[in-house]
Length: 470
Image (cartoon, rainbow, N blue to C red; front, side, top):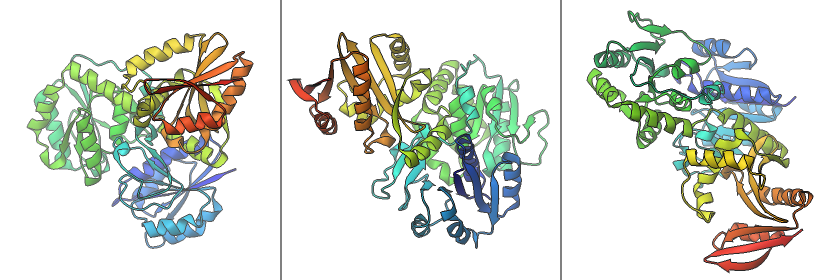
């Protein structure tokens, strides 16, 4: 049985967000047959959190003084070491890499050199960051890799009904909440309307009269989904709120949430810094959330985060170690990934049609394509991870081939391996000729198809037609 060691921050001082992400990903590794250990601070809050959240993880608790020394001692006993910590320096990571078979690090800010094999940043702003000068690692960035609890995908798949009036609200400000901020938020909701039911998830030992206090539970997915409005901190909870389609107002409670807050604003959400909060501002913001705006925000959130990040990250890391490439037929579960790959900036620059495709238009095309007997869509798999798409559009005994590799898998030689497999599959389907239309500026694709024996047969308006007889 393969083993993974998580080194995560977790304490009253550091909060429990790192630990929560690690435990979510641990579930992904459990599903793939791994044994999971976690190394973190010896802290009462940490112990309590670990005991409530996971019985399956083997726990190793040490003081801050000795924890990284213990990490170096333990690392070579595991198939994979996973870091989710702000307290480990670049020099410590460089040293650790020498003792680790595969080293993966969560990095939220692209602010320091990282001598690791894989970097994970599932934040909604992650695709805006540049890691090029900081690491040679493979990068998994953007909300497709958000490490939220997979239960959120179940609610993501359910149609979220947006009511005309806000009847139920949910407030969750996370481990950095303060009584004064929470009081102002609650007063603001009441100021807007005393008819709105208010539920609060809080660690504060305070009575709030007729409010519903939500106790600790493994996930708040159902509470968030069943609400008409969520007032949330701009940390991990923001991604959870987005994934289920509940409209939200977001509070930047600590400085490390600033980038999330800026991105949420860019996407059209209302965001306040903690020092800006007043009951009147909360009331005013709720007043702007008419049904049309809430419907729009719900759609934006669900298009951004689908709750499958844990599965994608765990599968990618496994594929990184195994490197087995094969094809399978696409199905409805591939809708979101294909849409994201299609709208990737590099993909669009290389495509004949460079327009952004809306999710609704893509969903309509994909649904009809799955029924189209003249079209074959395959998902390129590397072990258990989705690595790209191959499509054949049939015309008698020939077919036009299209290929799109997921951003995180580019440069691995996957396109060549999958095209060779596609050629074998095409021959069995009765095709005698394969064609490909490639932009003259797409030098990587031109080189790939030439190396596989395709010949240029025509050129028109910057688009070259290549073909190969089978």
